Image (cartoon, rainbow over all chains, first blue to last red; front, side, top):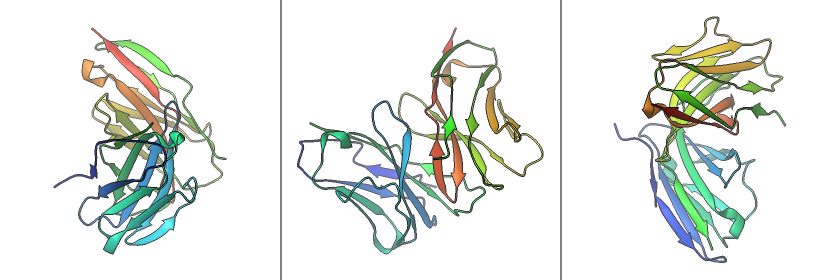
Length: 116
Length: 112
């Protein structure tokens, strides 16, 4: 079974440009999450999809970030325009369920974004 | 905000020894889950072990065990018989309706 995949693995862009990150969850996982870790800080939740719907987007930092999940399959996270403080590693994770109790989240390898 | 605290930024441990990584958390919830993830230098996040707040027994997975003390709100990870491949960053996390809240992590270096 294929794991969570993310593309690209690395991206270097200039301030003001646009970048789109892609995540393909494990097949059959309705729940998809985006997290990011900026340098020296904790891993922070960005948002949670259930199928194609945004369940929780409380962690999205501002309106320069736009996440979509087409048809409940893969997801994209667009940053437009990128700022220096957006540099970090963006992780995607997926899970079968999302109760208050337990569901293991399987993480992708992450996309390292560098904004210069 | 409800926090996850990992007080040890870094630790050295000798091969074959056991190591305990501390994790405490804030929560007013009665039902929640606690997770530990490992992040080696390659960057991927690897799930290690899970403990549910209502589980009566401490979780174990091979060389990993979780010392869960609910009243003290702590969920320490114990790695027994450390191996060189255990060198990595270790994150404690709490599940809040699917959203994982992470601690700052502990960098573990296993020495021969």
